[in-house]
Length: 145
Length: 145
Length: 145
Image (cartoon, rainbow over all chains, first blue to last red; front, side, top):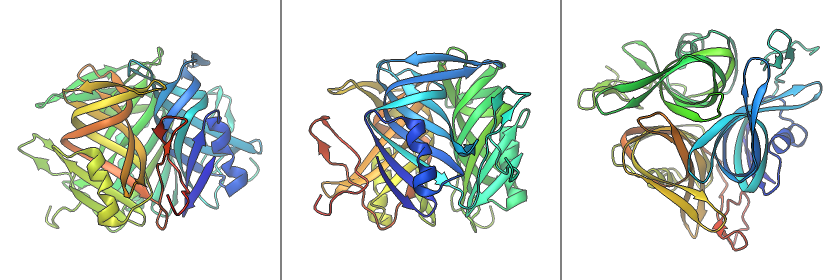
């Protein structure tokens, strides 16, 4: 993976086989980004799993053939001391029809280009919210979280 | 709603029931943003209306069930002295198929994460263009507009 | 086309008939942007061609009727001394269903709003990678490339 930065903005160039969540989360250690937004992502995914939250769980669809990554957005936070990357993706297959949702996992095929905007000095959190049954972004978590 | 900023960039964390246009437009009063781009938005919408401009009017589809917000883009301007928020959205339902278009309105379900990039010192306009029959973004409106 | 900037960020307002790749690429000459990310794009396209890379070539679909541009992402580099703009787009037609992929070409209908984030002092490359059969983004090309 190539990474270059400008101010508090990071551009990533991922390669075949790279895991999207893992590579974006690696900015925590390599660049000290503990709060960020994933603002752009394009390229190709070799495989992916997308989910629709039905109120209790993610109804998922496994994409086992390559899809064009046409849009990517999300956030980078710290949960339980580790990188927490939340992504939503739009993916186009051979018919050009677009499917999308919560990106459960995505593995790069050929290449991907991703832009992350950071919030230096901040740490976003993603605590479990029991009433929702899922983890929710917290832009200003209490220091203890 | 939570809001944090870094330079001329604002991250918003919206909650169940929040109106997307209204909350993004509130940055005009709360942060003095009179010119901006909505660069990222993900989460869930509880309900929404999306439109396709057929040359005369928006052909709209009402989404009355929750949809994953997979992509959001747009701009923030001032029209007639008030916030003017123009958004396009991509939304995925339970089948993961994505529908989208001009976002006429969207109400957050569970939560949404939105990033806005501002242009300090500028005011974008959105005057009605009679020949088009719709309001169009103007990056450098005359002072009188 | 209108263009305004803030720091290393450019907002473009395109008009009917503008070619997306050409107008974004014009930032190389007009603003000296030799490395950038296309982070947002909305509006309407009058015509477009979208491609799915099948491993050997782009399987393309020609859209000859207007479509809402609901998402746009990509990168701006220099290849063979000229602007190289790589875009992926999500487009919605009258049924609101979204199709997308690699944007082979796109001509603006009515208007489009685009945001580009630059990396001043850098030059991204897009050399042909023979093993892939396509040009691939290089964030840190050797000076000779």
